[in-house]
Image: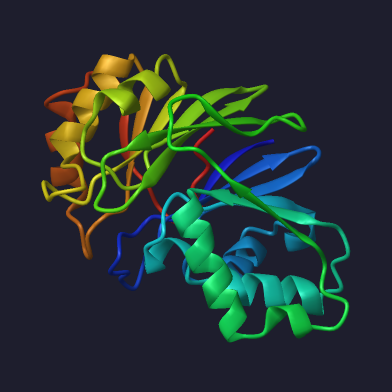
Length: 246
């Protein structure tokens, strides 16, 4: 059981990083967080069985976070999945996801498994899933479109994932006391966070560790860590594709 980073880049991948994505591994299945790029490929590279997926969380509607959903679902269908799969996120993200699937006439795929669409309200403490050994709770954060950050509670401890956001009090509250904070560090742009900003969130939330993700191309790892450490005294790591976070 644990939390893995499948991808760690921002909207412009480089040779070593794919679009940001995480997967929760538990005894009762996998939960994918974000669906950009090729989730099937990355799950298989991690030796994780995609047929064990029981849900997908989409933080917001931008392409680097959901463009890989049709390929994922087609692959699961071709692998003869039969069990339902839930897909959760803000309503407008789910609308874009459904529209994308309609382009490929997914409802005509013979024997397609059921999808359980779960619109998540844009309010603090919104429950995403509590049906197994993992509890997922979301909160709205500050981005250019409606976006939800996620708190992930496992038997091993709690983690938080920022999605795309500016530093905001909601992220501090959602991350309070987590074992690890997986926070974006794209840079000091509207709707995004600098390494220093991520460090400040980790400090104010009293997180034990900070992992920086959603990184720009060819990022200078040491410089990004040093900037985060200006604000946070705990361990700071640069996320890499395939890394275990918790």
